Amino acid sequence: MSNKVLIFCAPSGSGKSTIVRHILSLHPEIEFSVSATSRLPRGDEQDGKEYYFFTPEQFRRLIAEDSFVEYEEVYPGRFYGTLKKEVERIWAKGHSLIFDVDVKGGVNLKKYFGQQALSVFIGVPDPSVLRDRLTARGTDSPEEIEKRLQKAEEETRYAPRFDTILMNGELSEAFSEAEKLVDDFLKRP
Image (cartoon, rainbow, N blue to C red):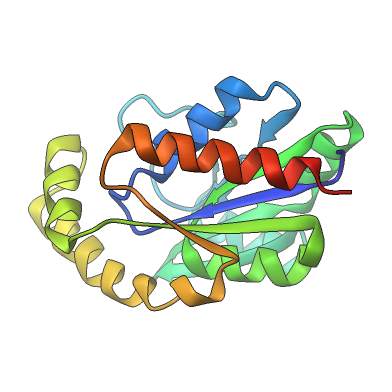
């Protein structure tokens, strides 16, 4: 099972992080791949736990040093990426990786890892659900929420490029479907 990769992607507010945490709670042999970002921490986020936080200048230097499996400038000056050393750290333990990344990162990771990876796009039954969830989070300004909703329209167009689409209308159903997808993938040779 080692060297397998699970990629979960979705627009902000789709429940991707909640589903990933659920999968991790069931599979001690899967480890969360901590992404790097140039954005500031939100709420109680800690460096090295939710993300590796860098300034935009530090992130650009890491790009120049070829330190990433993949990276994307999601918004001007706001980068996200996967550090090569993070993949190596997890695989050295004999664990599989799980990614919680934006859609462009997910498409790039799938290209990079190929059949070693299962890519899952998480969608919602109605775009208004995203607005409600982002507002309820209470971590973003109204302007940031609008920016995220505009981005969600673009991101949803990437859904067909993933191995499967998981709809998250009812969380318990999404959990069950995610469990089955992951279990089936991990059983594959």
